[in-house]
Image (cartoon, rainbow, N blue to C red):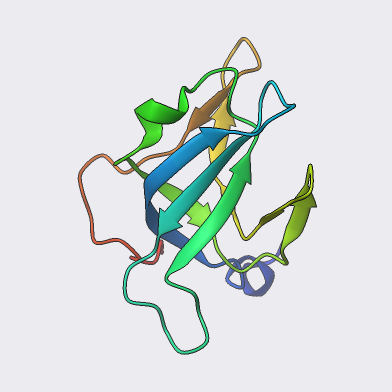
Length: 113
């Protein structure tokens, strides 16, 4: 089990996807540019996020959508591209990802509490 102090270290924020494209050579990876609004000191406003959601989501349908992201993960290389965070998704009964999105528009960069 994870205790509260450990869980509270995870920085979850609302981001708005403004670019999305399939990663060449991959069936499921999508490269997204995500806006997190007015960044705090030493935080990038725009991040590149690589996610394995391409079997379910067309890149053009992601543009303009808000979603929940983890923004304080160490960067990770996926097929030679740096991912600077993680989009949150559940898995449906068929084992496919379902992106977690706010019910209503909220300020980009808003922290999830």
